[in-house]
Length: 96
Ligand SMILES: [Zn+2]
Ligand SMILES: [Zn+2]
Image (cartoon, rainbow, N blue to C red):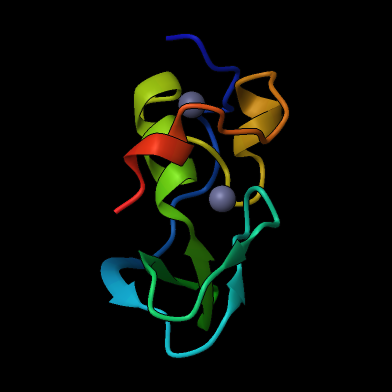
């Protein structure tokens, strides 16, 4: 594993992931880039201590997280977990 994730975090009581299409622009929780209206992205929900949290992750961050981190990063901490800054030079050509 390339990443530096803390594997001993408390696990949420419930966790759900959906691929959604953005009804309006959103910010990716990881790279803080805009998820454009109409763009598909990962919508995550988690129940923790009786409270639901929701966040949105762009496709680039999801793919990079799965490739470099194995999907184990803490929300909002992907880029620090893999020790990189949020830039996706590879993503420009393959969009769509
Ligand atoms: Zn992102
Ligand atoms: Zn990780």
